[in-house]
Length: 95
Image: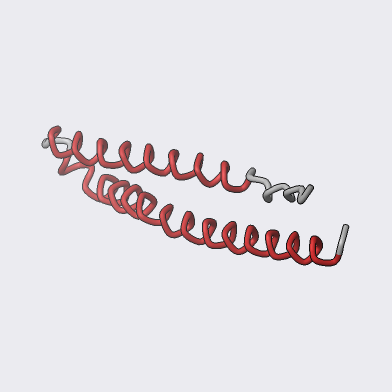
């Protein structure tokens, strides 16, 4: 490989690594939101279970919020795995 090809490939790999890092940081930030909803609603259900058992509609709403947040988290995790499994771009042949 010629020195200019090596430099170009190194630049590509550095850019790929920067983008991968940025995406992982963004994914971690995105995962916090549904986790916060799941945790807060689960804590509320646990703390208020006796009172809420006489209010089934409120219980259903809280459980639905937990389920929706869990679904969002599952989707984000799938995206995160896809990013983690991504490969750096292949060097382009200049021929």
